[in-house]
Length: 203
Image (cartoon, rainbow, N blue to C red; front, side, top):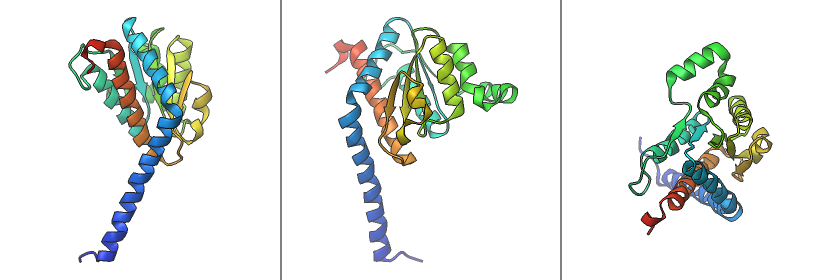
């Protein structure tokens, strides 16, 4: 059964609407959060200069974003440069299953931040709702251990907004649009960190 031209037109209009809304949210982020995004990049660059690292954590798509950006730092982004220490805390399935089994899923990131976090590191907590219990617990331990804490959030920021030092709250209540803006913000942070640390390689 083939689709009618009317259905194809409706589908194309639907796609345009999604992409236009994604662009609208990103424009709002550019207008309202550019300074805070630059501040987060500055903290991370300072941590790397001092021999520190970044810890990234979230659930679901946010865990994927954490892995993506950690790989940009340990690998490369736009140019060859020394590897930068970064850990996405959800990647070791033995960690996830052992801690989940023994302590409960809500303590997953608290335990891993306790294991890997040191004063002067930066923790990037990613949550579209700002309400994930395990992310909140990870931030609590991070702050207690002297890490800088940055939240990439949405839906008004939730409880995490007031728990992190620096809250980057995407102005949307739509999970997909929030996630699309999160990865754009994280790419901007990663590019700016490279510019800070390796200015001789900047065109």
